[in-house]
Length: 166
Image (cartoon, rainbow, N blue to C red; front, side, top):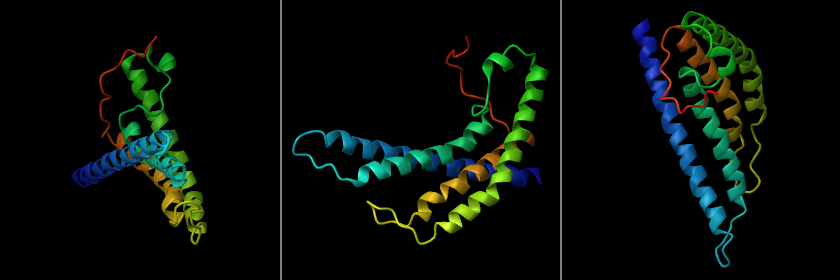
């Protein structure tokens, strides 16, 4: 069972990493078009503002689960850092339980929100809004899945610190 969950986790991580890269790439491209649009004679399409917002929301959706798995999403360093390792681990498990509970609690509402958006279309780019509103479902599902993974012992180490602690 652990191997099956590990395989699911690996697939979800890969999907989220590629999704994060794709959303960030779209955001970079669209913002570049917006900046170049300030140059006289260079066109600045109206849809770039909306696409930039959508890309930013997708960037958050795909990266929030990875942040949970690395213990980078929710952390109060001034409280947690001075604690002994065993107490830090206990606090981390409590935070994981809170994230899991909260995420599971909002999944039904997120699903209803997505289903309620069927038929709506974006104003400046003619795409169904369900492709955007599905993010409200991706975020709690990702948070629940990756916090469950942490609770089951699949946590990943954080990347090297950059000296943020005071």
